[in-house]
Image (cartoon, rainbow over all chains, first blue to last red; front, top):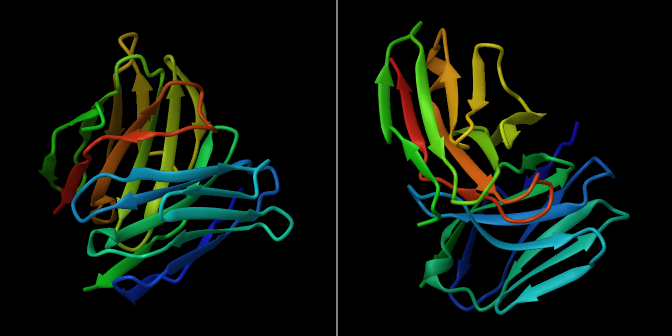
Length: 110
Length: 114
């Protein structure tokens, strides 16, 4: 089955700096890669996603890149703000199953 | 508010017992997914139902079972509970069969097994 690895597990950045979270996957059949943000005590919410036929996608301060050859994808957050502090999960989907990474706890220091 | 509801919000029970968690998807969504979130294991996909039929199975234990009813709500049954089953259980829904597109998560049910 699919195996998704996510790094780092914790990340602290100064407000205004950029944050990068990286994930790798093992199943070349995976074709959809969403990123979820989970604030403390709340439900995961989709922040951005990318399909395997696209190499990069951007939405304001958030961008995701995908390298199918290397089987890795990354989340980039620019101009970080304190409200970006949360746990971020990457996921890979092949068919109907979703496999999540173990999460990255991002802290943005004001 | 995602439109997905889960009950109960909290559940405390003893080892060996059986519990049922309930999920109502967003209006119009046909797929329901169940996830287990433990502190040390992140989000684990358990099972997916689409329009009443099982579509995908993840790391779901044999002691766990689920079903989706004609009105599209779903129940996750956990039996012979162990301490390690203590976790936050999320359900999520999506319009289609899954694989592509956003899943909308419910608020979760926190299960504590004592």
